[in-house]
Image (tube, rainbow, N blue to C red):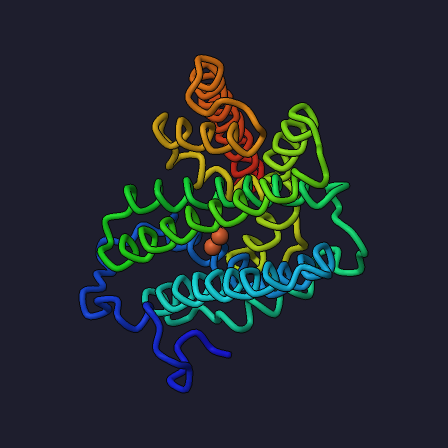
Length: 288
Ligand SMILES: [Fe+2]
Ligand SMILES: [Fe+2]
């Protein structure tokens, strides 16, 4: 369904002050980021399908997963509607279709790709850590009033989602009994996957020059650079504290503080390397 479709029931998206939309305050980088993020958010029903298979006999959790997926899809609709309001040439439905053709989740599973259900929930917590810190950073960064409200609303939802998965993680840890080291490894592994295909392909499907083939490295770098530029130390402190908690480590310890400073330094170093690689690529294109 179209994100601006009048037949949909009223949601928080309709209550946004759309009349205050100010295109003069939109940075083109932010518009591209919104377009790509809208596709990933909108794909949440696929994740719900995967989670139903990982937790096949947990009816209570199924209801929470359904609610979670609906909220994620609304994030996609809100971002898609904003992007189309700013750029009427943006074809949200077409971009969703392109994304789904080129990227799909491992839906043909009988258990978690993380090895256990508790492991799956650690991984889900980390995804929500990433999204809650990203939208918090984005709300601070943009000067466009409607986008700022959308990002603030989504950031609050993402934080609630983290709490939902964390609550269920504690329940499943009593059965699955995975140790702190395994949890920390799953958390670190999921953070590393940020640079996998999903965001890169969403960026290609939403913003790429479709006359050229998908380039995982360049399309991913293009997206992540825009995101990394928004992060400040405070965002990292909160993200590390939440990740530590999901991994079974003390969230407000010296170790967490040191890890946050190191992680922030690494992120900014990665950002600088990506900026250089992007410059090299655009020089090569100009010379060609
Ligand atoms: Fe979301
Ligand atoms: Fe979420």
